[in-house]
Image 1 (tube, rainbow, N blue to C red):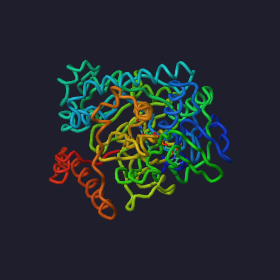
Image 2 (image 1 turned 90 degrees about the horizontal axis):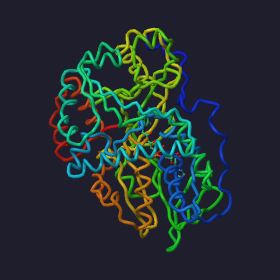
Image 3 (image 1 turned 45 degrees about the vertical axis):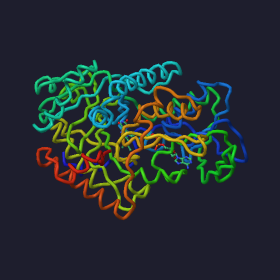
Image 4 (image 1 turned 45 degrees about the horizontal axis):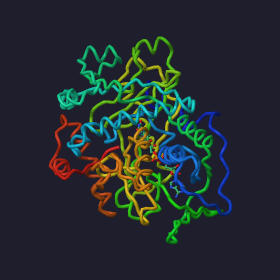
Length: 464
Ligand SMILES: Cc1cc2nc3c(=O)[nH]c(=O)nc-3n(C[C@H](O)[C@H](O)[C@H](O)COP(=O)(O)OP(=O)(O)OC[C@H]3O[C@@H](n4cnc5c(N)ncnc54)[C@H](O)[C@@H]3O)c2cc1C
């Protein structure tokens, strides 16, 4: 189908949030309150922090302040790939922390197992399916990348299955596939909005006080406690955890390390049985292709296909703006790529199109830290892979606030910071040139130009 026609009736809003299951907003913070811990941000990061704080110590008073609605931002509009990786994928982890990679992979799988157990414990229905992820190659050079770490994968005892062209097409039938690697237990598919709302329910059940539509405008340290000021009230906290993603940070130093990158997705109408049969997909894995600019796609529980990624857009000036959540140029490109991948689905059209903002940092995996004499902790910079990893980051924040030394706090990944981005306007120039170079590499068999090779050597990059 012509992409423009296929998009003609697509709603301009995130599919996952467009449901009557979305709970009514909770009340605003009005007046003054005190708490042992105040968590700022009602995405996965803040929700996990609040829930696990109560689980660690049910006696403490925990408040969560969300500026808008629970899960409205990246948390409620992502691909729903809930991954074990804590390092934005195995290759990035091997490059940056080779000495810790075995431990990081083990901790990541434990984190994913514990997410699954938590959902069972609180009876959260978010269509959690532990299907794994199928990494597919659509160009010959990508086959080399996929087989690059097989020895280490075997040594680490990870459950990956290499596949040739015939095997991968037997899983998901696309004429574009040349081979693949099925990471079988390291990823689950979820409905991210229902996961966020389920965590919200769990938080309320254990006694977290959640205030929505309560943006924290300022943070004042008065030596012993910290005052968090919202438009209609103040929360006085003994400890503060920031799970505020890429939004203007309450801790100024964070702005040097984070840039807002917009990622876009489409949702198709549900497939008929015949259409589903034409793609196979019996094991319902999430799928990611392997270019530097990559697509991610997956089935929903009513057999729609979510199709996203490829363009990772940085808007010069680095602002977070609602108008950036729609980008027709990208939607048309994504729709065209969808039909190239699945020509047998040429009659399928799209019901939703949307974008969301990602907290990109130069090392791609989250970074952690403390301020205000150790009474405030933060975890940000998940760079497009935070659905699962935010729970690990929440545990790191709670470890740091408690002053405990744990296996998590001793990791080099937790102790080190990424390299900061240069200030604007240099920042925009550098990022746009890097994006251009990445697109060039994809068009030239993955060959990286001098600029990308220099960044690689410095451990720097741009991703989503
Ligand atoms: C289109 C898209 C697709 C993605 N796909 C995937 C995927 O498939 N798998 C994956 O792992 N990751 C994916 N991601 C990334 C993932 O969604 C994020 O890493 C994750 O949701 C981050 O959660 P968070 O809580 O840190 O941030 P957010 O979800 O951004 O939440 C931050 C919250 O903090 C609140 N806040 C900020 N400042 C304040 C303040 N001053 N006062 C009060 N509240 C404040 C905001 O309102 C917001 O609700 C995707 C992201 C996008 C946009």
